Length: 76
View 1 (cartoon, rainbow, N blue to C red):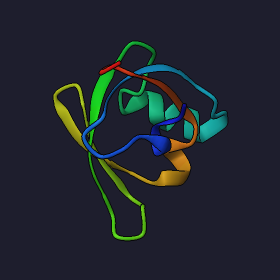
View 2 (cartoon, helix red, strand yellow):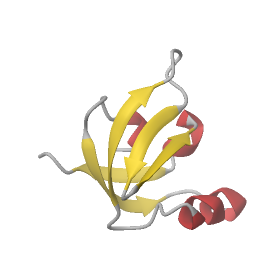
View 3 (tube, helix red, strand yellow):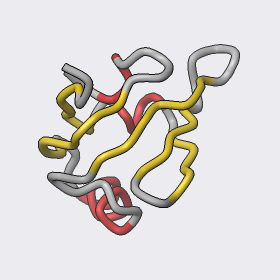
View 4 (cartoon, rainbow, N blue to C red):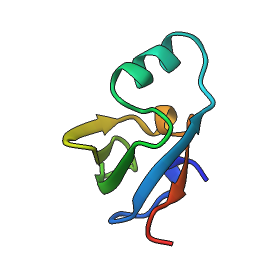
């Protein structure tokens, strides 16, 4: 599943990224790497942006970018 498919309150572990090029570089620079953990805190009114906690950071991410982040549910 990808990060944009999670429900509010779900915890996750990043498996890998499917993005390439500049988007991939930007995501990695922000800490979206395999094994990183986080939690989806809330969504914007139209489903984007996603407000999440990644490690010790709080990040807002567009849903189109979240589609490139493959995660597993840490609660399961």
